[in-house]
Length: 113
Image 1 (cartoon, helix red, strand yellow):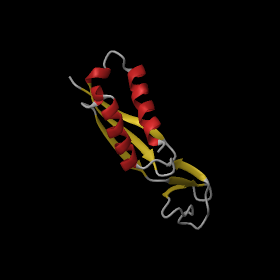
Image 2: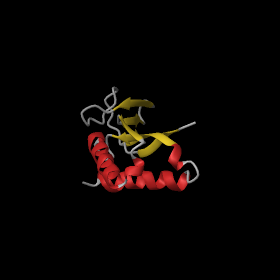
Image 3: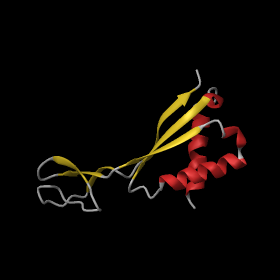
Image 4: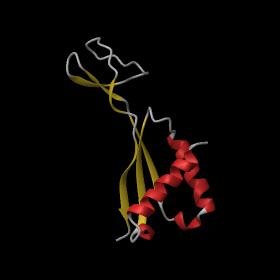
């Protein structure tokens, strides 16, 4: 399960980015694109496993938001959502230009006031 190192990296990044406020983090939101090869339920399970090893993180909620795949059509200059891995615009033109769906990023951090 490659999600455990990913969750560790998320919290290492938070600790490095906010060393003076890390203990005040209450919630972390992570955006995961459908093409990033990460399943939200497995991220949650990895987070629960991490909490059992590092109980000082138990006060933090982790939310994973799944992002759809969005591509751009060079032919008609429109963006479209990829459905069922069909990378074809409504105009009928295939597209390889992915605008969204490959990312895995921390999108929001909430702190105790």
